[in-house]
Length: 402
Image (cartoon, rainbow, N blue to C red):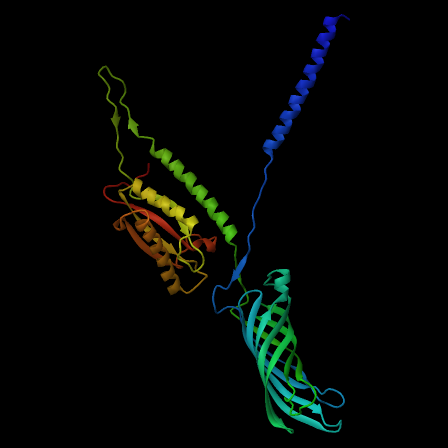
């Protein structure tokens, strides 16, 4: 083999390796190009009651109680009755007003002497649903653990030692709720009222005494026990997607406007003049922009002000049109009268922004308020807190299809 053959062989091997390396790199680049990364940020979910009348409850129960105080021999237990009325302000906390009482007994000053007296305790308690806090809100959960604390007043009467006594008290305990249906629960709770040492009419070395009770009963839920969720991040992403679609449709509409309708006369021996057929403007043009609002608010956010700007630019580019601004409110929140006022406030806020910030003449704008009677988005109630736009031509126009 001569030198020329050796050189040719080396070039051939190098070319093969180069081609394989380029092919491998192209495959890597192709794989990188088709990689798709989905990132959906999550936000905190808030819960609210559609109506103040929801999530109230009343409980009635009975059980046993005893007084931990000066006594001889075994503790004496007797009948106790209880009733309470309260409200859950969120899935995690609530408050109630409770009244309990009955008969208390103790053997004092000797095991052969039995002391009887009646008691009534009125307490205001703070309720914490520990199960929802730890495990997440679930309206169908069967068992809930609810610790509570509060302040109370205790009153004892028909006491053979002192007749009547009164004491401020602190209350604490735990309640177990067993769900039967949306409107009814069974419950069991244990609680203690810490009272002064003189509550039973005997002052001894103890600093305090306690009325301890175990109760069980039935609870009725007024208006149900459901909360609705609201995630501002998810709604913002949904609105961004809608705005992107609106902008795409607007760009498509602008491109269509640039196309002129022309009728060209066929060539003839004489010079041919181009004839342009003018079309009457349509009587109404659909405006896809919408301005959305937070719950119970008529304030325009900076994000939604972009849509107000888009409507203002359209009106400046189309001076022959007037615009009707229509406000809405979601029907599941508030009364019909309140929703009508809120929807009008939202429409008025948009009109004020168009006139004051973007110089649109007020005589080109009119306001309508639909409240919650009509819902432009029946499949998503949270989107119905919105203001939409409808244009009307001023002057000659045509409703004929293109």
